[in-house]
Length: 157
Image (tube, rainbow, N blue to C red; front, side, top):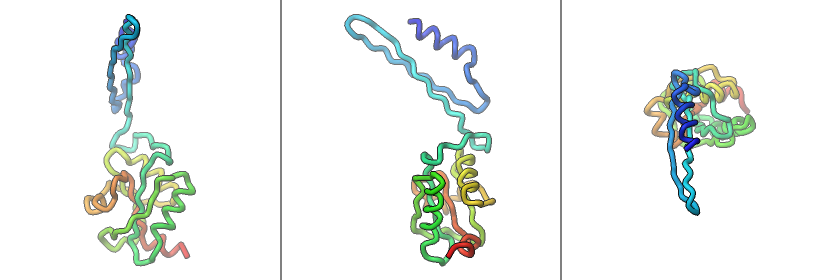
């Protein structure tokens, strides 16, 4: 019962009630040898669709790399670079994004702009934009997609 009161006081006092923060509470009551206890679990998400969100740990960020050029193996090279920067879930996928792709761009799903900006910094890419629907169909479950352009093809052997 004390836990419930403490939780209520924290919630009413606005514990961490940021403008973009979402808070959820779930309670569970269990009985064990005649004793009843209530446990409350809180999860907080401060993810936003703007750049104010915090980037996830690179190892937790799922990144798809697509080759937007004719140079074979380019997406694999770039995904290897990302893995060296801690993006262990970066993977090259087959599939050609639409367009001429002269410059490399990092695209992101809603709420993952900060993640995309981190990926872009790791690669030295300056173009970051929301995920286009034509690219989303190629991205699988990734929330961040790198489309390697001719600019990167010119830099790599």
